[in-house]
Length: 209
Image (cartoon, rainbow, N blue to C red; front, top):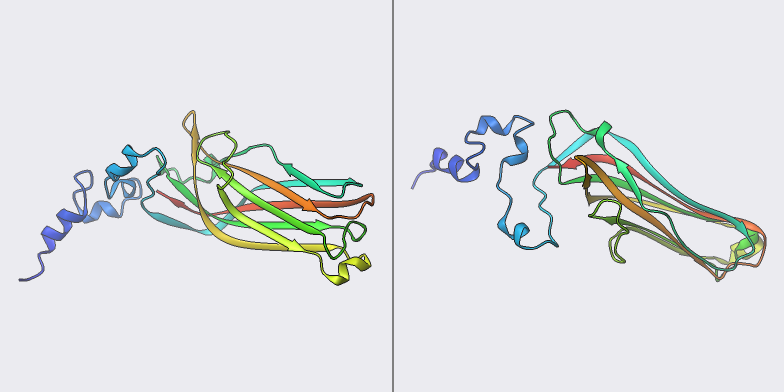
């Protein structure tokens, strides 16, 4: 049995597209495949069809929590941040399902706050609903570091980690957003009036359409 090119094309492009040439049109590329019925039946699932990378990523948001006090532990959360994606979207995009991002997490504490048992933790969380606080396990980045012996000699602590990931987008009044928060959990610090912080950033690397 030979390979039937026409039959293959018909089975791999839905009726909205029809031809392989339509595949190359940016505006139509979002409907190459029909959305699976499972996403309509399950509100816990979001369909993501095709990935489009940006040649030049954009810095789009930072959340910083910084304190100077004598606290020996700090558990804090930022307000919900909604990042408007309008200025980053190509004009041809009428709909997107998600984004590709690079996330960079940073924690720091001055020398007066640290000792070998000091523990610095931060994580970032996403929401699939606009302006809604993310769930406990909606984590897309996590950093935890414990003090070393040298930290007890007032060298302080500074650590960072970064990685790419994918996030869903939220939508409000026809505008697409990334909805996210940052959390801080620092413990076993020294009772000294010194500074400590988290600083978490996200960079836009592409779109899921």
